[in-house]
Length: 132
Image 1 (cartoon, rainbow, N blue to C red):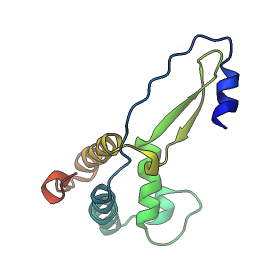
Image 2 (image 1 turned 120 degrees about the vertical axis):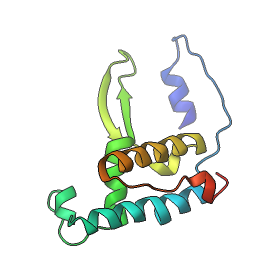
Image 3 (image 1 turned 30 degrees about the horizontal axis):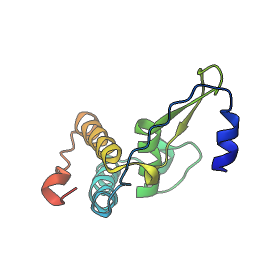
Image 4 (image 1 turned 180 degrees about the vertical axis):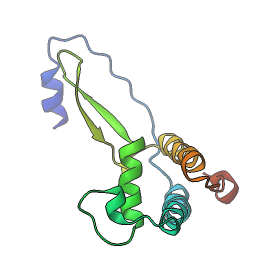
């Protein structure tokens, strides 16, 4: 697959940058699912929200999985570019599994800020809970 992608670049000026990237850490993941999403779900549920309020066609109680999808919709957008024109051709939700530790920290920080502003929810700083 790599060689096929390289062949597509033949005849073009290309700059390749290689960086070492650590994918999100286990402590980050535990904080995200066990603290951040849990607290947001609890707050929304105690305010009377149901699944259908956040996602059309969904019924029943809120789940952390649903909150996760909503947070990705808000904070994990990724633009896809046309390879020749460079214009944005699509906007997709990025998987948090592929985020680096730095990207995931920024993602978490954005969600914490959103929760503070929109839910008046003071989610504990993850650096005080884990070394992430």
